[in-house]
Length: 361
Figure 1 (spheres, rainbow, N blue to C red):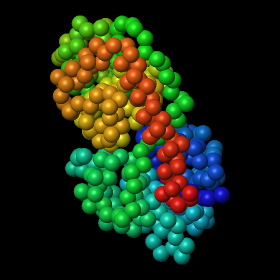
Figure 2 (cartoon, rainbow, N blue to C red):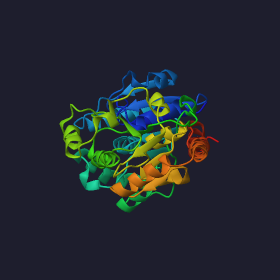
Figure 3 (cartoon, rainbow, N blue to C red):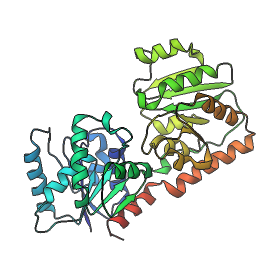
Figure 4 (cartoon, one colour):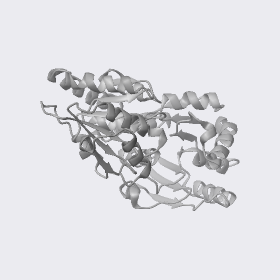
């Protein structure tokens, strides 16, 4: 049984890289998995942790970087993994540093799960990790990006490696229900994303306001999506949004059930890498309207609509175009969306891609 050691910055946070690691472990029962979190591990991903042979938290805080490198080095020497997979900048850097000079050095692959659209806006810690990554990237046996756009951005930033791969995030498609469209009114349009400028809430709210009077209802899920949030409340006031047209759900735990309640999904982000929400919505047979950010266009292609960022008129026009489609055309888009996920973005397919890069198959 092949041993895979995963090194991730933090396995106690809810994020795309963390969820992807959890799914990958569960999708590979024929491998013996180990997880090292530089910072913390908690029970958020308890199902994946139960499948691991062992897991470790180094409680790294920046000040104890040298100590953490030596701890990680000792773990690597004890486990003797067949491959090490890094997840995110800090984990990639510390893993590479910890393997320098090892007599038996396993292959080390980096994982990049981040858009680099605006390097200057990153935190100081991330900026330092990026500069180190630019220097150390050639020492890795390969780099795996979750998005084609991320590969291009990091290459432009100076990441150099002869083995660079794009493996998209994958989902467990059986978790998502397919609900065939029926004639009903109003049409339910969903949005999911934390309240953050990158998610384009200002453009979302203005679009909703411009669609007043149409048979549409909007459901918004995400941390901060409530009127106790003064910034969101101010946007509603500014654009005179009809509260009867919008349901604010804040953070939603049961996302499959959320997607199952929708007819159409809208993403207004102004920057993304690989937006998981699009894949999850499409897995539920929900066509998507998305801004052309990161790999969004490559995910949706002709199953939905791709519009320029900040273009409220084209976003509005796309919503109305779908609203006015005949029922058979809506069902065709539903089926195309679900089929695209089945063919490209299941965790089974993604797992096979990782195994190939690791030379396990």
